[in-house]
Amino acid sequence: MMKKSLIFTGMVCAAALCAQGQRAPVVAVSEVIEMDRVESRKYTGVIVAPEVVQVVPRVSGEIVKVGFKDGDLVKKNQVLYVLDDVRYDAVVKGLDAKIKGIEAKIIGFKAKISSCSAKLTYAKQNYERIKNLYAQKAESLDNLENRKSAYDAAQADLESAKADLAAAQADLAAANADLITAKENLKDTVIKSPIDGVAGVNKTTFGNYITPGSGVLVTIVKVNPIRVRFAISTNDFLSSYGTLKRMQDVASVKVRLSNGKEYPLEGQVKFLNNEANSRTDAILVYAEFKNDKQILINGSTVTVTLNRKDKNKVLAIPLSAVVYDVKGACVYVVGSDSKAKKHYIVPCGSDSEYQYVSSGISKGQKVISAGTHKVMMDDMPVQLPKAAGK
Image 1 (cartoon, rainbow, N blue to C red):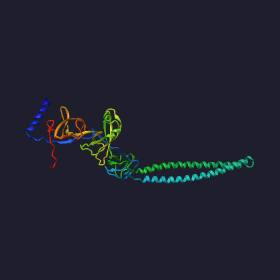
Image 2: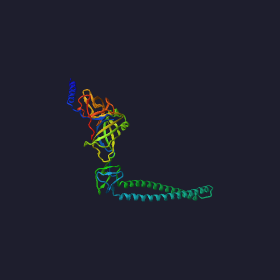
Image 3: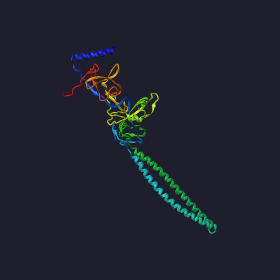
Image 4: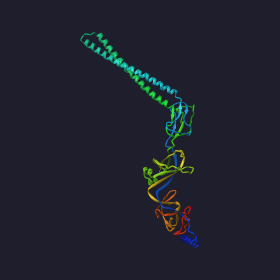
């Protein structure tokens, strides 16, 4: 009964306007277009740095230089601290000298081994010759025993020279190992940034003596690119995307900052966590954003809008064009006769500006997008705003 009353009232009002000679209402129209369908869902996200490095000392020493200020943007391998390296340099030089001495000894021992080997060969030949003569009763036992003693002594000298060489080679290996450690210690007196990032608060200053037990000197946080982490239900993921590859292909990510402003750059899904939360049945998604101006701050909370673009085109009209009555959603189509004709539509999603429509209107038709409240009945005459200057 109410529905009939409303329709009757509209007809009466329209008739009254015509009877009074009033002009048709002015309305604005928009053309029905085709566009990519974008489905949007909102989530709460947290900005997380892909790399966070806590810089700690590996050796002890007095700080003689600090190469950054709190909050500086630092580059990989940029010098952060320099420690007094006098004693570390002295150890390296001492070991270099020690190694050279050992190497000289090794050369001497090798020469001695060659000499002992020659003497052993000579002593062995003499011993064998006297032994044969003694067997023929042409040499005395004393001479045989003397040659045997000389032969045994030559063997002992050779074994001693070989033992000296082995010991020197062991000393050389130990010295080389010590030199590697000493060079590492010397290198560690210059502390460099392991990554590109932003330096935090410097927890020590010039002149302080630090040790490996001093703890974290400064924290470096990589901020460009940076990631946003948010959780979606496994049902949403499977029904909307199915695989990470498809999500990367069709999804885009926007974020709104805590001050209500939208971050101007769009992010891309980077990867998913390797397991879902058993209590919430949600999976963590990590999206990556360029952050040249450091607007996205590590650890802060943002509102994430996850958009899914379909490859298939869909009809779209401004949200303001859609009105609702007891039958459902409808629009007013303005034809060449300048009359507003009501068309019932089947909505199929929307974004922040457009209503997607699966049926009820056609591409290129013009629908009233401003002034729908002025249309009081179907087929009512309307007029469009005059162009400027006419």
